[in-house]
Image: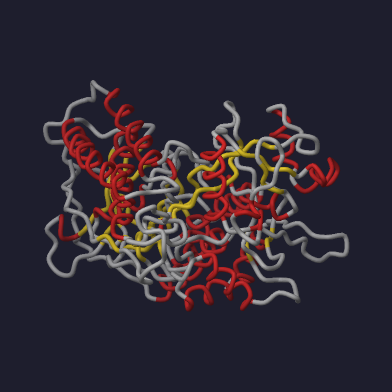
Length: 532
């Protein structure tokens, strides 16, 4: 079996992964892998922008306060302050890569505003900010001689010393990976592995996430023995375009920030019945309000109304959204925009510090994969890309400051296929994938109950047993690996939700409608999994 050695191994090509690799490259040989194309990640689809205090009338303290309010009492204040204060440096990192954020005619920053924010502090590049940032970072990465980057490479499992018979303290020493183009399985050996694999939106039937968002990093870390925290807090974006051909297209929260009002199909505003902030309330409140209105009226969707802004403004501020809507026969300057909530962001994840440290030595986690304490029970809009950039910078700084090396004689066992054969019933994989996503939507969605969670837990236990049997019977394929990871994340969400006997932030249950104790939910490490 081939073994690739490197000083730093980064898994994922979103903004957190790319920025981690860029910062680490000056300290040693860095290998980055991603399971599809580099651009296939949540970051690339981010429309709104990146939070950062820049207006003299704004302050770090105000940003901290807005974050804590949205987080419903579960944010770690020290973490929030650290990440918010590092914002200007993070923005500068992007500018250094060549990102051109929008400016006014006088040369000052054109800052946007989104739900939950008390001031304009969103750096943006029109309404395709993520795409512009990804493109600039990839250009920089491709020019760096110390970075080796591979597309179409999916991680099977992390390599943990206790599982390969190495004596001494347990630690992560790399991973087994599958080259999707050649079907070669090989090992990447490294003293420093960084998970930057994004979230798990595809665990739900309706999501605005790309198809790659199957919770790989969270599942890999859990199987490797890492602690997982607050997985019950799944953020549903309230305004996903409702159209049969508009797969996972978001109407950015920035549209509401610029004056769009949530209305029913007849154009009647309703948010004032749910929150004093109206259409600028945080996402959890807005998503539940839309869900409530849809259930009350029996309508399949609600709408956004920004017609008062006019075509000239909308085409300039939201060119991508405006023209995408036109493709579906919707003129934002004349028509209501039909929208529904969809799974969007995972506020929980691998328990990690702001500089990426997890409970497993040698393993770091950054971005949406990690749970640092920034988001608490609900993510404030556009704080995610800020966290991705800041945790990447701080993680790289920590790893570079204390170079780690593996023993020269550390042997990685060959990947064993045992009695596994070529899969001959791939329909089982697609069937189980569909079943998981539908049961999560029906039983573990925006509004939950004990009964629904129990049903989901029971069925998931059976499905995970069936998936485990399939995994060990057949040669690994990308679809099997994603299904396996998706099932783990689904169960982690359900188990975490069952532990929280209250309604807080994104977790709303009819059985416990009030807030209770201010606690975090932790799911202990998973069972050992041998290479198959």
